[in-house]
Each structure stands twice: as C-alpha cells, then as structure tokens.
Length: 437
Image 1 (cartoon, rainbow, N blue to C red):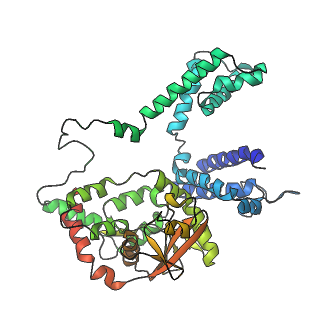
Image 2 (cartoon, rainbow, N blue to C red):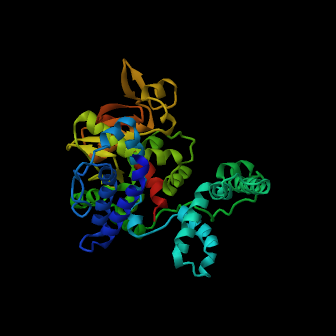
C-alpha cells in the first residue's frame, strides 16, 4: 500500500506547488497558506479520503476506492508521514519560489559527472533521463553504487577488485564526513589560538555610551503600536517562524520564551553576554527540529482530547509595554492559550516514563497528576504569554509519540507584576535595547 503510493504523494505535492505558484489573483501570503493546506491534505487525497480536497486537486471520491487513513492512523504510519509533510510545510514559501537546498545541489554535482557537464548531447533515446536516474541511485546508495548495479546486470557478485575499490571509496567518504562533523571538529580543535579581534564576529554591536536622543526616538517609534497594529501583526504572523514579519517584529522585542532566563540571572552573571546571545538567536538543532516536526501531531491529539478547535496564533505585542511579545503555539476559544513541548530525549518513552526516568526536568507527577515545575523557565514562559496576551489560562502540553500529558495553568497576576516586571524592564532597556539597530 505505502510503496505504491509514495510516488503519488510526491506528484500530488508537486502539482499543488505548480498550481499555487500560477495563481496570480492571490497574495504571496495567501498562496503560502493555501499550499500548506494542500501539502497536509495530500496524504488524505492519496490514501482515499477526499473530504478536504480542493476542486482543482481532484473530483472527489472514486468508485471502489478504499479509505486507508484509519488503518494508517492505527499502525502509526500516519504520524510518520505527517512529520515529513510538516517539514515541507515549514518550507512552503521556498517551494513557491522554486528554491533548492544543499542536498539537491549535492545531487546536481553527482549528476554533472553522469552527463559530462552538459558537454555531450544525451537527450536522445532517453539517455538524459537514464543518467538522471543513475545519478539519483548513486546518491542514495552512499558509495555502493557499483556493487548494487553489478549484481542485477551481470547476475553475479562483483569481483575482488571492484569490492576493494568500493570499500576504499566508502572509507574515503567516512573520513570526509568525520572531518566535517562539527562536534568532532570542535573536539579536536587546539586550545592554542590567537586572540580574536574585539570588533570582529557575530556579536551585535552594544553601545558603550548611552544611545543618542535621535536613536532613542527612532527606536521607540518602531516599538509603539496601536491596538489595530497589534491585531494586524498577530493575524499576519500566524505562520510564526515561516513569516518574515514575525522575525522582524520579534527581533526588536523581548519575548516570553526568554523571561525565565532573565528573571533567574545571578548577580554575578554578565548581562551583556546574555543580551548578545538573545540578539544573535538560536538557529536550532536536532532537538528543535524534532519539536517543530511533531507540533502538528501534538496539536491534533490535543484537539481530540479537548474536543475543541485549536487555532494558530501569531506574535502578540503587549498593548502598553510594546517591548514585550509572545508567540504561543495556539489558542482555544478566546481566553485559553496552548504551549506544546515535544522533547527529543523522550521520543521513545511515554511522558510518565520520561519524568520518572529523569529524561526531562521541567515537570513532576503529583498525586498521579502532571504538574509543571513553578521554578522552571517554561513556567515563566507560560505566565509571560498570559500576561502579554491578557488571556486567562494556558494548556501546557507534554507530548511524546506514546502519549500526552497536560496541565491547565491559570494566570498569576502577582507572578509577573510584583516579582519579575521590574527585572525584565531593566534588562531590556539597560542591556538588550542597546544592541538592537
């Protein structure tokens, strides 16, 4: 079932990209939103559920066509496919612009060897297509291309010299990968090195003197937003990290995700270094990619548990403290937020097992109930989101492929205003704002 439909899944997504790119009557944001919807619906279309298919996509249910979606959900394949589709969703804007990535460029370099750099005409008798397939097979075989094509063609195993050549080539590839492995390279790096130039590097410029009046006024003007502006920004940034406006408005503000780090700073901590790390930002790693990939599944599971529709939520700016912002993972109704955590360390266990085995440190089980630790940075993040958005409560969700735990946390008026508001404001205007330009 899966093997026969993989190519159909790819074809459906390619057709959706081509169609959305050609619709000139829609804005780029609308094209992006429609394409995301089509990508997530492609699995339903291919496996027999056409309830949400657009009219251009298909003509509806076919005779004698079986709906395999329930079977996919039961065996777990549905979630696995959705994870990969979500990666395409997160890069939908690039798909519309027909951009490539490093993997495709690497394949193109392999293809150039098979087609002779386009110096020879291989277009006749399907020669070019054949060489494209051969290059793809070589790319996917990871150094064993000759061995894998030798057996089907000659009906016998490769000779001794071929095996030696393949083994030698594989050893070279392994050495190259180790050489460019960041962790290995950092571990081997010598401690004896020249002192870096103080004015060179990724660190944003932090003014040593006070900001001039002109820069202050310009910066305050950038921060100030009316209620209409705030609502418009929230509506336009529901795609969050995939939206350029989300990055622009978030970069000049202090968001709730950093509240815990700031409020728990020790007196001896260098605040300038903390502000630099916040300004530079975290570009992500394997754990964050895992969380982003599974967020869609976790949101759908929570919709099934709560029997409520979870809507996307963009960047919300505090109406009076315009230097503060928050980007929760969703909103239920009008007064309940959603914050989802999908820890990479707990991917093979249930949430209860992850807590008991100390794979996560942000929660405990008290009287058989899931409870977020009140001194953890995630609790500061939740309370910060509630304060900025002026909502009543937030569902904090701990999701793994084997289960879901959640706690509804109410807004604590005293937690932010009396304990942490002054510290966050001082940090922003004394340190962080000086590095924003």
